[in-house]
Image 1 (cartoon, rainbow, N blue to C red):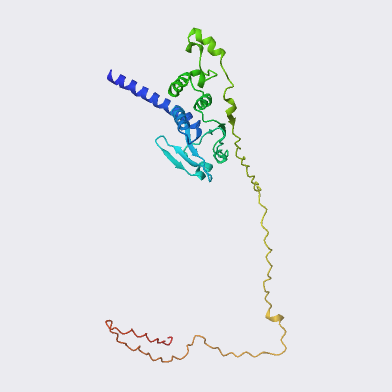
Image 2: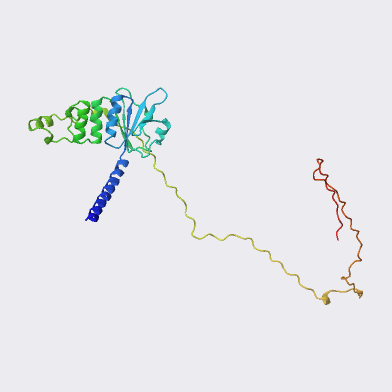
Amino acid sequence: MFKKALLTVLVLLGAISLYAQEEEIPWRQNITMLVVPREPLAIQVAQDISRRYPVLLVCYQSTPAEPVLHAWNGKSWVPVATADYVNGTFFTHRPRHAVIVEAEGQPAPDILIPDGTWCESGNRLTSTDTRVMIHLLGRYFDFPYRYWMQFSKRYGYTLEEINPALINVFWWHYRADEAIAAFKARDFDLDMDKWFFLDITPPEPIEPVVIKAEPETLPPAETPAEEMIEEPTEIPAEAIPMDDEVTVDETIIDVTETAPEVAIEEVAAPVVEINPFSTNDIPAAELIVLPAE
């Protein structure tokens, strides 16, 4: 009985682990980079959203030279170099979409717009008003009913103020006498004049390099023809004309005889006594050439 119960628990744990791994993949694939100015309430709204959705949170502060950037790593704000932001090298998993928030009348620096190599699309939200941010970001992330209610209570707004279109709100969420009036008052166009698409240029496609195929058969290499060398022909002695008789000395010289030996005196090399403990320089050795034997 105990073994069966243990086996059941192990199976359930394996199923939960597999489900968690499957849920983690889309979380990493559908990351939104949320870029907000350095304003307390704007940052607070962005952090509340990052606790519920896969968000890469970046804070910027405009300066005359270049913006000062910080990224939220889940525990603290870390500085980000402008070059790292432009090249997209400050994160582990690249975002699919970017939402750049800017104060009304104070546009964000153009350098914050991704070039398309590491982020495919984006939007611009031209207001840091808390209600407007909750409304437009809630529509973008498609808040469920419970999130709309959580944000309305946290920031002191009614449901209709932060969700005028009543997205993901159904008639059973109201009392019978309130549902008809609430749905008649829905406004789908409120605040949409502050939501724009970013002009992100996608990277140019990489053209394939055409490599010419080598010929199947290679032509034979040209080699210079070898010159024909005629072998010398032997001419018989009878064919050589002889004007006079040639007398040949019949004396035979024995070439094996050796020359008379020459006595060579062996010269012994003079012995030079050297004291290895002397401080004087060791004299150079005398070169003596011995005669060859």
